[in-house]
Picture 1: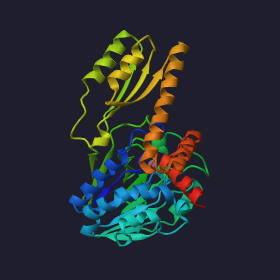
Picture 2: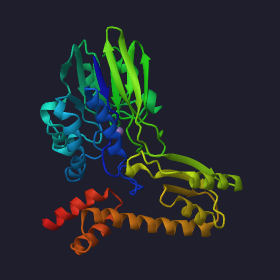
Picture 3: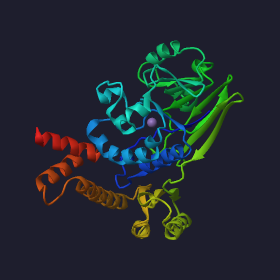
Picture 4: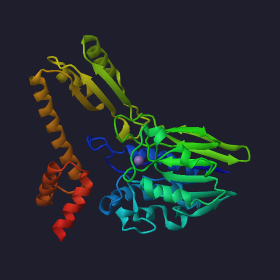
Length: 376
Ligand SMILES: [Mn+2]
């Protein structure tokens, strides 16, 4: 019996809040996973955090993207999805309904919320537990029935976190608490892609489909799992359409030359979806006269950037901060104009821009809230 395990997809137009110009990354990763599962006619397991933010207003934007793709590639074939809710698509965002509204995208007859349910597919049994506090989770694992083949949870494994996250707040657990509860334990939540054996149980942390933080590994994966009499076989598949990512330093002349050469020679990959063609450059650099201008000219149209000056030269820092602020204003205007027409709805447009400048959150949610406030 075979099935596909998705990572935490975090579907949302803008996943990296500090870089609102970078859009589409999570959509493209989700597309990869849905396409593969659809083409190979597999059961699809979603281990939580399918949406980045389960609130009702912003969800509509994501559903416009997801529904046609799922219908065409997945739902029309009658394929099934088993899912749990993670920390981001928690039932608390959805009025504690059994099926959160965003699951309408998966059409309920095809998708099953596996929280505290024994489900069968082929000759295998599956059981799920929604993401919850450590204390609640200890109660939940005591209630797992015997003879489960696949247990799906959304808890941070201490072995991956590298620390104990605490009694009540964090979503953590450890392998010792889970050994023997199933042949395979799938744990969403920690954005590290890894699988291993421990005490005769196979553990799979599928990680995330998109970099939520710049500290994460840029290469992401999903998993095609075979479960048969020989045991668990995990085929790790790279998410192919990832944005090119460069992490560099330019603290001296040689470093500056290397960075300028790299960005100058970089060619946009026409095979990538258009929204992912521009790379991301994270650069720590020593600000010297002219370098910032030369660099920003070289990256124009090719890279989104996180430029971190490391120096006591205040003049350059101030200049850089001014540049960055101007960029953010441009981006807010650009994103807002996707949702609200600046000339036909000038008052609303100005208000939405102002609200976003005050609280730098997801612009589409803020716009939804702004519209609601005006209509109220
Ligand atoms: Mn996550």
